Image 1 (cartoon, helix red, strand yellow):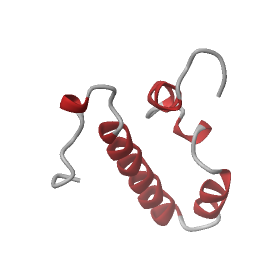
Image 2 (cartoon, rainbow, N blue to C red; image 1 turned 120 degrees about the horizontal axis):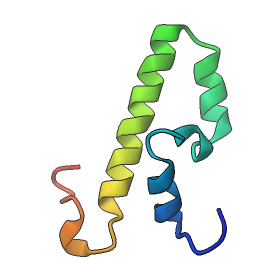
Image 3 (cartoon, rainbow, N blue to C red; image 1 turned 180 degrees about the vertical axis):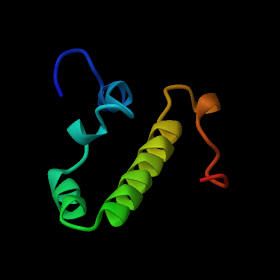
Image 4 (spheres, one colour; image 1 turned 90 degrees about the horizontal axis):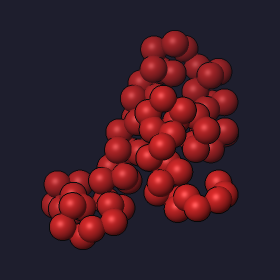
Length: 70
C-alpha cells in the first residue's frame, strides 16, 4: 500500500469486494487447489478474520470490539 492510506484504511477499502488484494497469495492459492466447498469455507473464514481485525483496529478505542467478544 502507498500514499496517505494507513494499513487499516487500505484493508478497509478493499474489504470485502477486493479482499484478495490484501490477503497473502499463498493462502488463496491453497484454497484454489481444494474442492469448491473447502474453497468457499476458506473464503468465509478469511472474511471473518478480516472483520475481526478491522473491528479491533478502529481508530477510536471506544469503537473497538471488546476482547471478550473476540
